[in-house]
Amino acid sequence: MKKQKLLVAKIGGNIIEDEKALASFLKDFSKVDGQKILVHGGGKSATQLADKLGVKTEMIDGRRITSAENLDIVVMTYAGLLNKTIVSGLQKQNCNALGLTGADGNVILAEKRPIQFVDYGFVGDVLKVNGNIIQTFLNQNITPVFCALTHDANGQLLNTNADTIASEIASAMSEYYEVSLFYCFELKGVLENIEDKESVIEHIDLEKYTRLRDAEVIANGMLPKLQNCFDALHKNVNKVHIANADFIKDNTTKHTTLSL
Image (cartoon, rainbow, N blue to C red; front, top):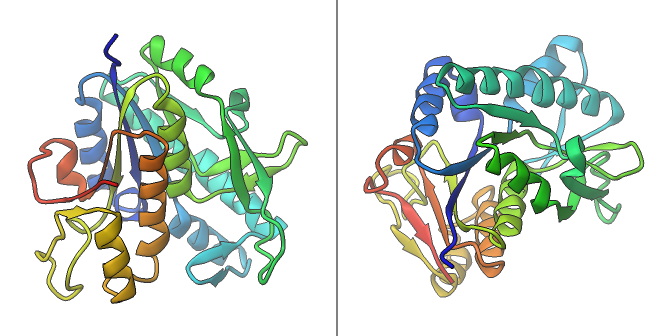
């Protein structure tokens, strides 16, 4: 029997920080036919709140060091203000949404990242996604909205990369659905030349990714993003796209598609 289609979309600060851009995206997202899941980050907002509260934010290679104080701020920002703003925005568009952390319904179990060269603090690496629970929501025509928080089953919330959460959810749901994973990006896709916003690389497979990485065309923050893309493809996600917000309403716009 043919599987139903499911869209897993991830948005970041470029949309979340812009009230008009967020409202426009949520309007377009709500119109997507069929089942859908939204994952959001919010690191910029968390940093702004930390600054207001006089709590130092430390980043290493673009990754947040999550102290106990910073975890409190992340939880307040991600699971509180941002998640509920997004959920209420979807309700406005008659899209029945439910805001979730990984702890809710025991949906995403993680472990605290072990200390190696860097102690990232209360950062979690995903162990398991409970696809059955998510499918239950979808079957009730409820759109889950996940923030970037997981838990360890011992009462500890953990800050977890939103790109990774999107990849892991998409992978888990591929057992039940034909899944497309969409990373909404401030650019039109992965660029050949960072100075030329139109130089979108429209297709990247593993071989091309390796060449681009070795040539340092793909570097820094794009490396973990693309690794999440290929992880999802290895776990039977059907399609993975990186594009700007226009893609959600018109998937013929220029963008980057990834394949194995």
